[in-house]
Length: 322
Ligand code: NDP
Image (tube, rainbow, N blue to C red; front, side, top):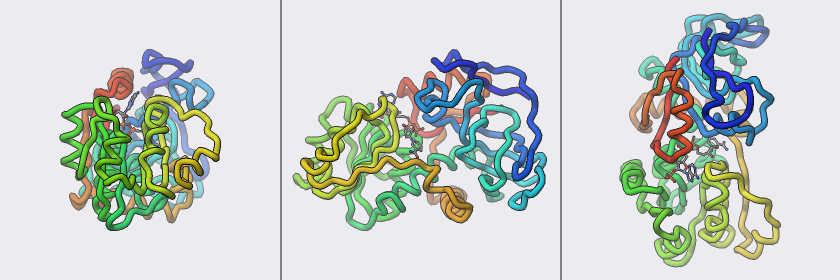
């Protein structure tokens, strides 16, 4: 089969499209014939080594396809099922081995592309807004990179829960998209100081929660945008990892709460996975949640997809097609 392989950590040029041996499912595993692959920032971290995985490795943490075969002791799916998954590495390929407990059956109404585009960022938006800081009517949330893959979904879910949403984006065009997704206000954080602007928009109070996927370049001002006892959710490193900090800082800035969550810990049981994925795929199928696909690239163009994502040229979701 064809796959994209990283033989050594580095830039997008390290993504090699090549022939590899097709895997066979072992106990508890299914072999999925991949129809559509979701590109995520975590794929860049695996490629560069920021999140260390020993090469050679096949990147890709999200896909949708058809179960081609199952190993012993698999009860969740049967060959022929239309399925999707997130958080199992190896999706940049024609076939992938996936623990069957990670697979969810895709509703008939949903295309493989929309299913692949929804799983990882959709479940992330779900746990951030429903579990990490469960938003309620009247809360004010600051969402960075609001026109990004995760951002557009966080904004929509925050609005579903009745929150007021302040988004940040780098360009006017992205601001338009973030507004269409439901942002009440959008700050161009490349031109305006988002901290003072957030204070102004909240009458000096600050926001209840910041969902910050940008990391190094926004972290400090995000803390300064919170109300006393507000919640700082730092969940990504698009601009680089956040440097270490002393807990005393949280006291000085208003007895703040700080958490650094990951989807793996918010979908670790089969029950939680089915509940989150069921909500997300159901909302997309019903048209309650809109998934904006920036572009579907051929799998042979994986390096171009990484270049575009890293260069902040994209909005919403990038897909790869094997
Ligand atoms: P996005 O589509 O959000 O792309 C990243 C966006 O970040 C860019 O479009 C850009 O938006 C903004 N950005 C700001 N500074 C930079 C920079 N220096 N370089 C690149 N981008 C920058 O990507 P994803 O939705 O895939 O992921 C967003 C983040 O969320 C990633 O850090 C990812 O790891 C994290 N994440 C974390 C999860 C978790 O469970 N912890 C799960 C899923 C994602 P703009 O141009 O508007 O500034």
